[in-house]
Amino acid sequence: MTESAAVPLKKPAMLLAGVGALGVVFGDIGTSPLYTFKTVLDMTGGDNPHTIYGVISLLIWTLIVVTTIKYAGFAMRIDNDGEGGILALMALLGVKRHKRPLIVAAGLFGAALIYGDGAITPAISVLSALEGLNIVEPSLHHYVLPLTALILLALFALQPAGTARIGRTFGPIMALWFVTMAVLGIWGIIKHPAILWALNPYYAFAYLLHSGGSGFLVLGGVFLCVTGAEALYADMGHFGAGPIKLAWSALVFPSLVLNYAGQGAIVLAGAPTDGNIFYRLCPSSLTLPLIILSTIATIIASQSIITGAFSMTRQAIQLGWMPRLKVSQTSREGYGQIYVGAVNWLLMLVTIGLALGFGKSDNLAAAYGIAVSATMLMTTMLLFIAMREIWKWNLAASIAVAGVFLIVDASFFASNMMKLLDGGYVPLLLATAVYLVMYIWHRGIVAMAARLTEDPLPVDAFLDELTRTGVARVPGTAVFLTRSQATTPPVMQLYVKHTMSLHKRVLAVKLEIASIPHVAARNRLALSEVGPNFWSVTATYGFMERPDMPALMAQIATNGCPIDPKKLTYFVSMEKIVPGEGPHSLPRWIRMLFSVMLRNCARVTDYLRIPAGQVVDIGRQVAI
Image 1 (cartoon, rainbow, N blue to C red):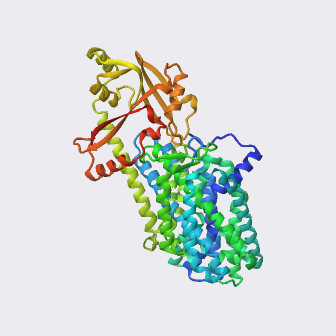
Image 2: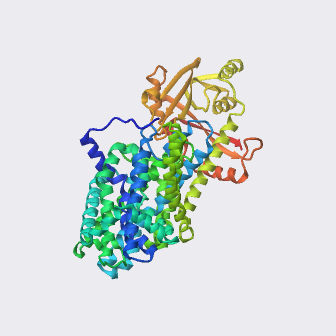
Image 3: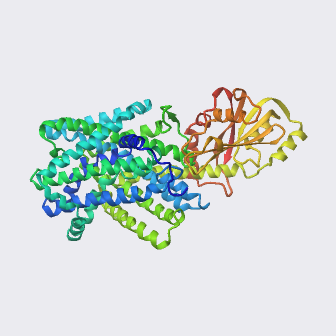
């Protein structure tokens, strides 16, 4: 897929999509003013004018370079059939050549890092919002942590019900949030208008040059202002590039700039820096309503992260990099409305554990940023390859543009790594665990497939053998899954070997996952009769789609194959892993962990929506 060429939306439709994007795309980056400036100021150890101007300038220009230029200006021009995000980009670049292990490794570890971010974002966002209670009434300090845990528990507990109805209100609420932030920022700027000089990038460079090593360390805190920037690219398929860019440039970016400038202005005007500086922008009589709005905004931001984790999990499953997990569709209105129970409850445990363990948003900020900065660094590397291979830029132009992004991302990543021992190891450990699951599962699946197909039997030879050995052909239609249409499905061979019978009509179905997110219905099916009553079926799905066998059989029935979808018998294998030898064997630790994953993953019949009353399970041992 080349540079995005989507049909432009009409203005009213784009405005509506832009409002919808506010509640899904910009929740994370939109709630960062709650804690970012306070965190950076604590790291600088001072509130003198030179520091304030430098910090505000760094925040503003980080938003411009990373979000506006890199993501909105460049990354969002590269789409995989309309979809964005590091996994979609990996799939797009991965098909350019057959063996690209470095691209796959970068894409997968970048995706795994997002899970680490997903666990921290709800904890730090809700904590920072509720910490405003300390300003309203210091004695409420003891209730902040229990309330945070309670809200997070309720948020995750509501996920199985779906968020379709709630989602309709996300956009307008976030629009109110951004307008409120802008108004508060303007109110702060009025108190010290000179803060607008921070729009000049000179102050950012001057601070970095004259602050010694402390300026480099501060970058780790500054980076918190763009922790949600990756969502602009990742959620492009839900809303389109146009509405996301419109919402960013017309409302989100100006609101963020005004609010950060306002916070800097009130500190220059003499406001105390203890507690949450964000709430100092608000008149005391309105602090409690602002805390309520902030809490709602952080819940929406957390919901967006959780939904994103569900969506990325489905992509990884489809691409063969994660065990099959039960994916439930929670709404008929949108394909993105899904629920993955295993991911939800694990995220809940980790998120609440982080909130209780770190206790304050200031402490969590030390753990925040490493995962996102590493993901952005890997995205930049993939963008460089895309510039060369998709846009066909020459080497000098690609290095010039990607090199700037690489320097910026590498600087932020290196600065964030200084926080490794202060909690930064948490998201890295989470990402490593997710990456390990992906690696083990993929190696196991590849080894198992190779073992099952190491002695292939051509379909013609199999049909001749049926006739020669007098295998009984019983009434009905059997459906077997296969990995190759040129050879006989191993499950079919096993069934015939033990029963000396086979149904009169047979369908060998191969399910393929394309490197694009969606496959048009007209391109889904390839159907041919390769022998008497022996039909070869190839069904292709995008990595954002979930195969549906009953729906596929209905489509096959309308395309010339004489079957009754309600009277089919599906033969499904249940593999048991045992130690093996030879080129397809795995190290003992990988084999053991893969075997555990295989036993506990969702049944293939559930994943493919095969009716339980039409299934025959056949057990077999696979030596790897």
